[in-house]
Image (cartoon, rainbow, N blue to C red):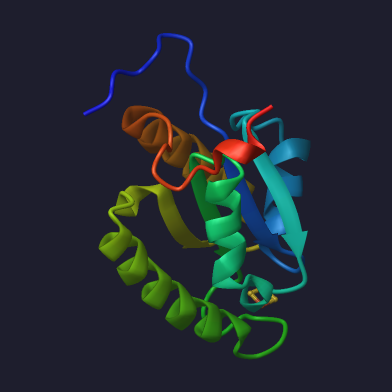
Length: 146
Ligand code: FES
C-alpha cells in the first residue's frame, strides 16, 4: 500500500454521453451541487463511443481514475449503445484485473439528464475512492510527465 500525500488530489477523467450524463452534469452545475474540480469531463456522443483504449490511454497520461457515464439501460439515444459499452467495459475490467490495476479505479454509471444530484453524489464518491487508492503508478507513462 502506497503512502498518500496529505494534499493529494486525484485526476479523474469522466466520459459522459451527450444525451443523459452530460446533461446530468449540467443540471448538477446549475443546481449548485458540487463535485470535485479534479473531475475532467469529456463529452462523447454515446457511452459506446468510448473505446477501451481511451481508458488505458488516460491511465497512461496520468489519470488516477476513469469513469464512464451513460444513459440508463433502455434509454440510450442510439437504442443499445450503452449495452455495448457495458459489455466492452466488463471485458476491460477483467483485463485491468489481469494487469494488476485496482478495479476501483474504473467505474461505469448510468446517470440520466434529470439526475444532477446523482451525478454529484457519484463523482464525490468516486473521487473519495480514488483518493484512498492513491496515485496510479502502474500504467503511467513517464514520458507523459511534465
Ligand atoms: Fe447515452 Fe448512448 S446516448 S449511452
